[in-house]
Image (cartoon, rainbow, N blue to C red; front, side, top):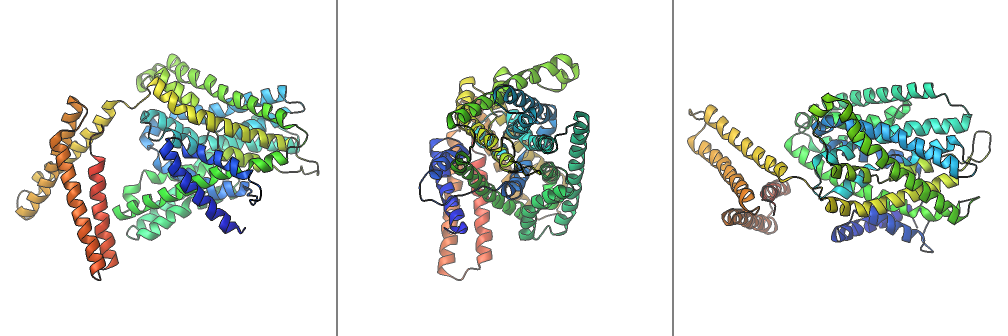
Length: 533
């Protein structure tokens, strides 16, 4: 079968399974990995091998870049201490715990091999954490910490990975030199990512009105940032994340409204396809991993994999709870600055440690032989253990995390929803105040002023209705429902007229798409501001 046919078939399966996952209300990466496992064992199908170069270059940069764009930068800054403890401290702690346990319980496993394995399985996956918590209405603090951790921990683990690999190949390892280089690589990567982001900001500002080119540049930027950093022998992962965070705070400067809408739509599709493809490819790797398992029986390898999986899970729990409470006990400033997290919230964070694509790519990237021609020690076992850790954490923790959230009742407080509604009302009120202060003396026609003012007053009435409904019974009033439904009905009428005009006459395609987009945006706005039952 031709590779193009294989990829097309996998994308088709991915799309179908995503629909099934939504119907079953489970995270689609979990279903994709499980399906990949079954597909991989079907006889007669072509062998699909996931190249580590493809993961590190094709998949990883855009997925990390998209995650950096989506995260709330202000929230990330607010919880930066928690993110740093997880992204750096927990990675080091997990790597050490895995190294010690592997060295003690796996025959012939050196401490250097243990650290290498620890670096591979330490970082939780950004996509898995986001997809599992999506739609569960968990507090913003939890999602920000998990997403922020997943953005940075890849860089931490890959630096440890490089030193573990170098220690095995050269037989030399100096802790203080590795520590200094760890810090140096981190700072240099951030600086390079910031510089690339600064340059791209000015490039985008020069082509603000060219929506297509702006969108294409956003697709090319993560690859360019990653390649430049890797050529400089620093962390491409950290450079991509830094570039994404830098540009995400400047979208109003570098994009027009139309470019922003188009870019968001394109990236939503790209991220979905890349995520789906990479997770189903993870599942397809098991047959080849098992076939290459030399020197160990399958039950032995499975037991070692379950042991390391348990170490990875327990290490996170042992780190997260003290990491949440000890700094508060030791620092009065932290107690003043940060709201105390509940033990239920900490429990959710401690259980959200699903591993994914970075771990498998790191294991696959291990060389087959050492420079002296000898086989790389323990490569097959490291690869198999990594797969077991991914499978256990992704499936077990991924399926039980929503149950844990429901059991502990870790949901977003209603006050946060009300804050959003109040903000929308304030924005509309400020717009009316601006109109009255700057355009009431004949600067614009009275009919124009009245029309615009009435539009914002109607929006305020809608939001006031929402607040009254939320305060009284948490349900929209009958009048508000009627108003929204009537507006949506009129939009449907306008859409029918537009479609009839397109089919019955030679309506220009650009005009049609523009007017259709306006109707879509208005319908989306009405759906967005409806009260939540």
